[in-house]
Length: 466
Image (tube, rainbow, N blue to C red):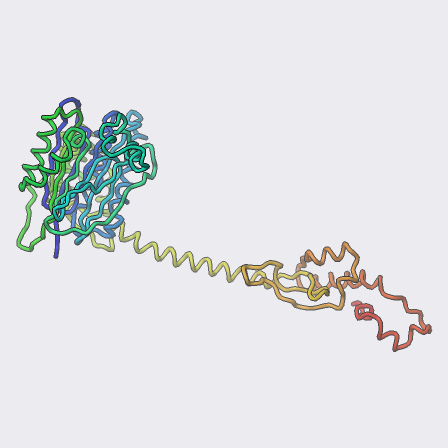
């Protein structure tokens, strides 16, 4: 059974703020909400840039959906770092992100910050996301109660956020089974700070029409003073019947090659046109700062930067044209999936090749050591690789270790390196000469010189030096 999302969304600047730092997108397979850090210059840039970097995921045939959202959010974080690098005035900007991607019958969720995701399913209303705030940590540690967290003076202090402060922020990622009929709501803290949760739940439960429910939630926030921006995204999981086909409400003209080239060079108007065209190819709602950036160009750095990258990708055929679905074998994610086994195979082959070459090299080496208290020539190197010895005995001499003086004995016990086998034999001969200095002297014609006495001499004393 194929599923899709039926959605509604609304954003308002509130009663006090001068600009809207919230952004949100809702489509048939993707819902994203980002709350820019309003206390910093560029909160609207951060939220709009992040949302617009994710909207291309809104289709049914995402490759590797389990990693798609986390990967793209991390990429969006790098974009924020690039924007700060290009414009130091944006330093310190950040944004929360709460996003869900529908693939098959699974909702893939990626979240960071204190924007929230609530679900009404089987008559059970609950918060699915977890706030990354200072007070939530206090609650988790049992230092304060949940009710105290709602009125804590530091309840809006974020511990995790997307922005230029962290090159690789930690996201909460989970996969959730989806069923037709369940309803979700994503919201910025402008809603939950102004409207009690029981009232929010009542509106979600008792308002069948989602557009009406979203409007009621925002209106209630404004009625209660709305000290912050407020943004609400609501969607229901529904069956995707074959006879249903949703046409986008507004069709933007497709950019030609010349327009793409201009956008790739950084033209703000061309970049905004490219974004509008891509988004217009599917049913969706875009609200808040992201809508402002694409429709009016009042946040040109967002449309310019995003347009440059997408136009360049289209010109070099590295991404699909707006509205098209890439061949799975041509998508960047697919390339990563195919490349990883190849790289692992090549790495394994290289390791094996190096191991074989290393072993073969050891078999060309020689050294002098001991075996059974005798001096011997070894082939290999005096080392072990786990249980595997990298040497073997080549020749055992008749020279006992104890026949050598202390210094020579220590050298042999520590092993003496040889350039080759002939060199090792020369070392043995030198040690034999040293050992023979301790042999008994035989005087010709004496009693000790009889053949019977000669045989009683140690073997190394009888060995003929070469």
